[in-house]
Length: 252
Image (tube, rainbow, N blue to C red; front, side, top):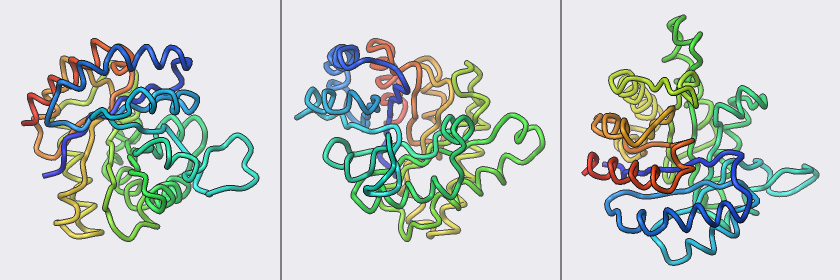
């Protein structure tokens, strides 16, 4: 069974001081919760400060994005080699980057491979739009995103996959647990077809999209859901701690 993981994606929020205050508010509560890997993903500017605060704790650190090249003339970008001394995880292919910033499946695949090459654990985000779901294309879209996202990867060690239906992100309209499980099962089958069932069973599958402290347990109870990638709810110490606690109780 994959290790349960709850990751908080702060997106483009918090100054350095705000990030330090946020971590200080949630750290004691998160430290008291066992049985779940806890991850926070602040913006680049706060990574070093948050890393210092988390030293010696059970809370891991992730970045929200990275470039796939190790160095070069890419003004404003951050490379995997710049991140590896700061954090353990990195989000790749988030729908906001795919749909607002034009990242292709191929670019996402390069990022996944580059992250693994330096020892970072990539969280590969996949998910369909509402139109794609209404047109009956959801399974095909997600299968394509998984396959191309792993096109340059020879093994699944360290990988996580987050299913985030685009229509549920930040809208308050979460997928039903049944629908989420159905897609997670399809993702697991896709991984098994590519790498074998044993390797696929070890990959944590996270649900994301309007996850709250009140609904997280209903997702955590599902067979192929091993945790969550949380957005807005991770920006409140009290809410995030309660969410993680509820998930931990449901997952054990």
